[in-house]
Image (cartoon, rainbow, N blue to C red; front, side):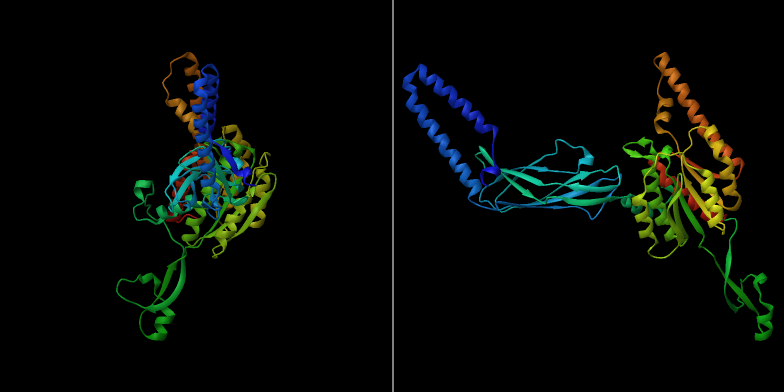
Length: 442
């Protein structure tokens, strides 16, 4: 058992090669042989001392890995390691954590020296790019003494599984931005409200400044003094977030798929919507309608949304917009704001689905969110050096122009749209929702 945790350092092999050379030399010069044996005996004594230092104390090093309850997809997550040295000498540690295979990290290693009795907190960062369960293996620590000839392996925390959810860190960030009074530098802007929906609250006595149009003449006659109706703005509208999980959403960008960007933006937007006291619902579609959550503003709604977003994955099918239209028409009788996350690359692709989008916009307010290709945009900004660069730039401009044509085509039929690069998806979508909310056009 002791020898299973024993490892030999390169320094040991270096000394061994050195002594082999000395013994070969001693055969040529026999007078050196006694001195070589003395030196080799000292080396063997140092090895025994090193072994004793490492193995006489059973628990020379203790370590605990601390992980978040859940990881945030697409964000930097910090993993903590608490180390304590129980040896009476400074321990040189080589820490190798068996991080989940999804990260494909083959050379993860942390080197650290810890004084006797010292307790140290280390941390490292991981950025997951897929939702699901991530399993950490053993936390391996190789300890060597100041002699540095041998090392002893300690193992801790085997098989620790942590789920990775949509970006809740991302959600909290935009929650603060949405309700900060310093919104403008981040892209928020105030819009003059064009109208309002009012709901009766109470009848009260008239005071100077009240709108005379709200005088309640029946109550005035009974009380023999002017009485007015008091109204409050009705803020709770029904908002449905719809995610296309067809094959067009599998396109990758900086490690995440467009579907994961849409899921992260949905989570951030959901938090803002519920803070604004609106009723929030969710469903996804491709060949069929899935992950349905009815529109409510109750306290458990955020947890239900989170659980459904955790389960979403693309099915690589062509999305059926006719089924989406039929489902909305059958199940959503009240006028609602529909925020649809999808992607169109060409005007022809849009025209195939436009009749269904127009049908949705007839009874509801439709906001279509789709993606700008950031790499194509960068290509159009590069200086052309060769003929091929000119061809590439022209083709990129053509695709970018198609995206702008899609926005114009949607506008013709009263469909609102957000064309945004993936990294700005959450910000731009929240901006669009707050603008619609401020204008009172739901």
